[in-house]
Image 1: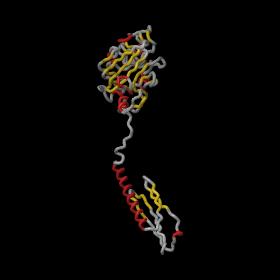
Image 2: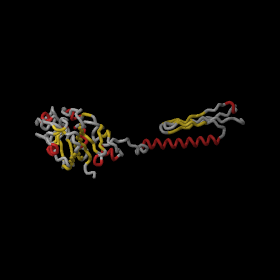
Image 3: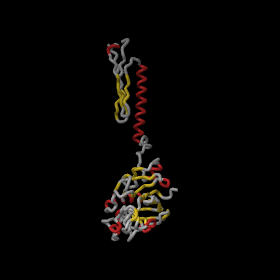
Image 4: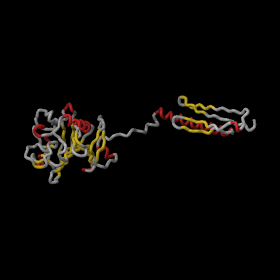
Length: 307
């Protein structure tokens, strides 16, 4: 019938990874006013596309068929890439740096708290010193005042305590994971109450696991503070409830790698400079002796042989 409308319904049915196209035509007894406009919806899991499939020309029908064929091919190609892993192969989840030096290499330039994840360790927060001697230092000990008690127990030193921006001990478990993934250098920064500063560097620093009592391995000294930690090399960590038979934590009021005595006691009592009690303050014997408790200390690590 002249003027009859070819009514087209286009359907895309998702079956596995293919589309099926179906169309229906009606020409009997129908005039242009007999049919409303019927939009047909083309759907796939990636996009929804609405095609207005009301027309009365065969070339429009051909055009729609070509579009459907192209969409079908594009979708099948996408499915193939997903199945083969090609689409996602270049997309990797963001990684967490293993230490503060890696953070610096990735663009971190501000001294502040960051999250790191050493090898085989869950992630944890640390303070990163990005300013001292080229930066990239992972800070694990700091003393700034007497607000935090460092005369603590084994589990306290194991897990860590304090505030990352003031006084704190990072934790011996964290030190174990951190120092067993690569070789590290230790830097110790010191300041007295007369605003004099000194530093000590050891070109190797490693802590064993808890089963080995966090035994310390220490390398060669350099700096201007004096080699006060040489006596710590090979020593097990001791606390007030696990003294390893030497009685030192009770005598010197801290947790440390004590031998029978010490030349460094950076976790001792914060006694504010000169004091009368023997060797129980924050001491660095080779600099200020056993009767002077320092104002500021900071111990930090960076991978060895960078410069």
